[in-house]
Amino acid sequence: MSISPERETRELRLQQIRREAELRATSISKLLSTSQVDKRPSNGHALQDFEPAAYASAQTGYYGMPLLKTPSWTWEVPIYLFVGGAAGASAMLASVGKLTGADRDMIRDARWLAAIGAALSPPLLISDLGFPKRFLNMLRVFKVQSPMSVGSWTLVSFSSAAAASAVLTELERRRVLPRIPVLTDVAEIGAALTGLVLATYTGVLVGATAIPVWNAKVSLIPIHFATSGLSTAVSVLELRGHTSSALNKIGIGATVVETAIGASLELGKKPATEPLHHGPTGWTMRVAGLLSGPVPLALRLLSLTSSSRSARSVKLRKAAAISSIAGSLITRWAWVYAGRASSKDPKVPLQLPGPPRPDATQIPQDK
Amino acid sequence: MSVTAFLTDSTLCIGCKACEVACKEWNQVPADGFDFRALSYDNTGSLGHSTWRHVKFVENGAVPGFGGNASEVFSWGFSSDVCKHCANAGCLEACPTGAIVRTEFGGVYVQPDVCNGCGYCVVCCPFGVVERRPDDGRAFKCTFCYDRQKEGLAPACATACPTESIKFGEIEHLRETARERVRDLEEKGFDDVNLYDPTETSVGGIHAFFIVRGDPKTYNLPPKPEVPTTYLKKGWMSAGIAAAAMVAGAFLAFTGSSDR
Image (cartoon, rainbow over the protein chains, first blue to last red):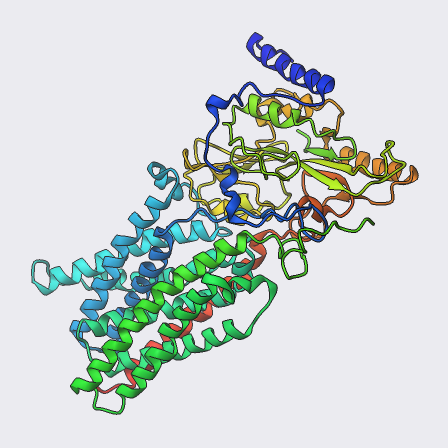
């Protein structure tokens, strides 16, 4: 094997590092001159992010340092989870509504809600990429084992179908185009099917990771996100002035499920789910749960006591809608931030017993 | 091409950080801060986007008799951490662009010209290794010196290690070396030597195993690392149930309402 002269110089440098280490049992990098030092906290873990333990031991782990890396996702991701979920559910509502002969104006609004959500989602995701110029690399491959890959393809298909469905029907309605049933129906059904994936895959995306609080709830998160998306879609349609009692029924169903999810999160305590019960992440999840579950459920049930078009009923349903939308948005933030908190605690991946760390002043026992 | 591996024998490590320096120089990895962390002599904290070898410093109780420790002086445990290059790698499975690939040497390699910085590998690594570099945006980790291996050379860290604490070679051969070394140490009276190589979990073994004294947890090595693809089945089942329930619910609500 032959190496070029410059490679040989670099190879010699490795030998030099080795000799230096042998002689002084320490080594100094030429790269680490103070002028080049980057003040950014290394490895994304600022010191204040965690409480270092005084010792590295089998009881504390390595000085209590985080074992996992913190998700690098920023604010765009929870917003996308919210927008994409609502858009996907809305496309499904448009399709089912059309099949069952629901109010045309409502179907039209549902279609547009899907199309607007479909238009907003890609920019949100692209701006969250570390290297946004390469967003098209998402479509280099399709990997069924990667929810991120499945999701990228789903979003592309959904965006195209939802936009086509909304625009085509609008052009037909205004008689700009003749009616082409095959094209509009394919777009409509395509949007509904991909919309169902869009509203649920994000739960798999979050759940199938190494983050303890997420993978501990991998069965629950897809259901939680889907319900939350459906609630939002119904709520937006109600705020647009649609009073169909079918919307209220779907809303009641979704808020019942939300209430059950909230209760199961509150009751199912294990070490991995600590961020759902303690501190700011715990309270965020509780507020989200109340605003998406019991509060809108009570308002919706109250609205049933008056006739569905009465001013009182409409008011109550609009209040429920606002609560659900806020709750749904906060739900996504709560899950993302619970994951961030969870990643910083080495207790679960190291299977350490809680409470987190022993008294820092105590020297661990020798074996 | 044969599958290669690292054996990091921390019983031979003297904590000189030559591996960290050699890795940085060879791979032109940027400086990652000059923090004094007050965590023994460790100032890089953990593996990350700009730390591909990381020497851990563990201060144990005094062990008189081994190496002539005085009873009032604590004994050292040093261990040079590195990407584990898992047999079932969470980062590789998760990567949506195909930027992360398995090389002909069995290593897991992030192609910097393909990565678009989606960050999904970061949350899918059960060892907390791969990370997005904030000023660059892409994900980085140990390349297993893919360039050097292609030329038949050992990785920079193994080349620079003055005590041969970092060994590099064919994986099965190295596993045998590791078992022999553990036996040898046990015969010499070290009763707390462990080989860290989680073959029993869904990770299916790693291409960078470690000999450490004491509990591997002390070095933040997780006892049961799982590749996150194991959660996919549960997740997609739930997603399917949720989707079906949504459609069924909407159907029932619309058909059951006179004012639909």
